[in-house]
Amino acid sequence: MLREYYQLGTTGWGTPFLLVPEATTVDAHTRLQLGKAKAEDVVLSHHSPMGVRFHYLKGLSGEAERLRRIRDGKPGSPCTEKHLSFNTEFTERPICTASIQYQRLKIDQLQKAQLPEKEYQAQLAEVLGKECLCTGLSNSAAVTYNTTLVKNQESITICPGPNIAFFNREASLQEMCDHIYGRADILEGVDRPHMFINELRLYIAYLQEQMQQCTGDKMAKQLDVFRENLLKGITYYRQLHHSEVIAGEGFGQMLNEAETQIEAIRHTACVTTL
Image (tube, rainbow, N blue to C red):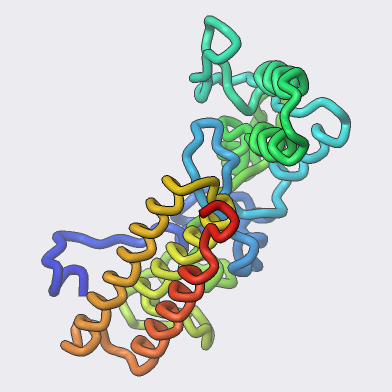
């Protein structure tokens, strides 16, 4: 559809190749966790020190290490590589927001600010949520090749797209290519909706999240535009479905369900702030 209807030159696959040892450098344990992952295990996180949202697999050692440091009263990570050292809020020389140095300074600032408890806890959670990616994203390769880990840090982080929830086992490169080109089916009966439906559901989940954080009239108006654009998108998808650009008996019903969800959000949005 993307190549023929939208005239794209090429299309590609990404996340499922994390389950292909010949294609990506992921250690065996992490690959097993990826195969077990369900939709609820892959979250749109705030963990990046760069402030960019990305999907993140919960339950790996990177998360466990971050939470252990918090429990021990020593939040933050040793910043050995400094690839993401961009913050100059407290220092002249940039530091990383996931580092021990930054989190100690930021928490001290929050404690002295005498914020309302709810606001303090929200800002504190944002600070403590940052996770070291320099070592976390590279350690899987180090484990795979049994080589020296960076400064003896062994925790692993991985950031698959939510599509990983539909793939439940390791596959060879041949198997994955056969699946992509329709010569085989490695999903073993898994019902995977059309990619436009999956993307729409991600947007709806994001809208619901933002509605819960709605803080005033300005944000409410921005979210209203967001919601209206989703409804326009559903109208557009219906046109594609009716013209048979998108096939599938269940596609229309899933659009109806998505529309109902969005309308429900409209009726409950920001009621405490408007």
